[in-house]
Length: 384
Image: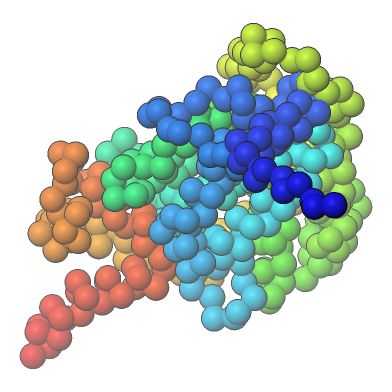
């Protein structure tokens, strides 16, 4: 008996199945089918959700590829195993997805936010950010620059046209120096954005400790006793403690044991409006317990004193910042030497804004090369 040939699959049903699986998530989880959308109309993908498309668009940017040569903490380290912005971003995505899955939230959205959250970081880590903040009228913050990269600068000035959910969460991921629980740049509306914010802190604190040990700046026994007692004495143990604490502390607030089956568009919109109002009041749902947060803040303060602001590091930071100051003033005075698309300045923006975009996009080694090109010829001409 001849076998009846089946009709090929309708690709649109694949996205629909992905969206239907999202209804098994918490009622407070973001749903791609109910997204607030993109600024410009965009045909949906037949095989990917809207948040998966955001993730893929970020991965294929030039800014994402440059992260592999951008410093995390140690400026232009010689060793192969020091953390870069790219490896940091991957660790944040891993920690964030672990927390999101445990709390029954949207992993795809967390991943999209994680992969794009540091695209605006300038060369030389936080030293570079401080230098540009001093130079750019109105100041410079890497979270806002990340959003600018995604909305304005990438794709030859067209931007990526990402969803509101991804953009809003990226803009509010930064934390003040005082505490990992601080809300200096606003509370993300969505729980996935709040997951990213705490995952970022978990990742960078632990890999910065590992890098500091690798550099010989500290040993495990140098870390605060209280922090070691609460968080553990090994890299993996500390991460495990923090992640588990976030999950248990946030479980009820995230309504992790419920599902969204039967949730209509109207129900969902009212849920997001409520989360937005709570965020505006500074209410955080995804967080560490007070005991663990206190230990993390103590460890973070120790790192600022003994690593980030160490006297030897200060000298290196000072050189890096002076290099960027000189480059910034040079390009502002000579905009004609900027790459063609920037020199043309099609948006008619102040030259300081254009130069800040250019420098913020540089890798560490490109900034060093740009400095050599701008100033070494003059030096040799003076020396004769």
